[in-house]
Amino acid sequence: MSLYTLLLFLHVSGAICLFIGFGIWLFGITAIARATQVEQIRTLADLLVMTRMLVPVSAFVVIAAGLTMAVTTWGIQTSWIAVALGSLVVIGPIGAWVIDPKVRAIAVLARTLPDGPLPHTLTKRTHDFVLRTSLHMALAMLFGIVFLMTSKPAFTTAIVAMVISAFLGLASGLWLGRARRASPSDRFHRHKEKAS
Image (cartoon, rainbow, N blue to C red; front, side, top):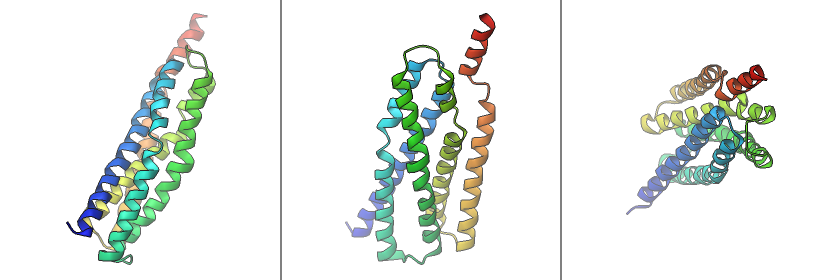
């Protein structure tokens, strides 16, 4: 087995784990937004917090293996590699400084509350626009990087592909956010207010 084959295996495996981590975050936040009880939020948030190390470790493996392959085989100056690395530099802080702190804040708040209907403070955090949109954008950009890896386009095409993927992520986050505006927890609170 050559060094390149081993690096490619690590690179692809890291990318799979990265998608798993962001996927768990996305589906977890989607489920949390539909929850009506604090105990539901607590269970889901604990699952999301357990995956928080998967994303940075996977990203490190992807970048380390990818950089080594680029240096030894392709060259850092290769246009699609430069754009892919730049995109990972954008995605990294989104995960570390936006998504992870917000997920942990939801988990911490849910642990301090008693079981029962969601209070307004927790409902507000579970419907966080920035959190949801960041997740959609980061995941869409990861798909954009996969496109770069498989098609190896010229620089301009690579830039356009990443801009389109980021835009699609933003648009899907906005669209689904509007669709979820009347969430089950909101309907529960309105029903409770009418009954009292």
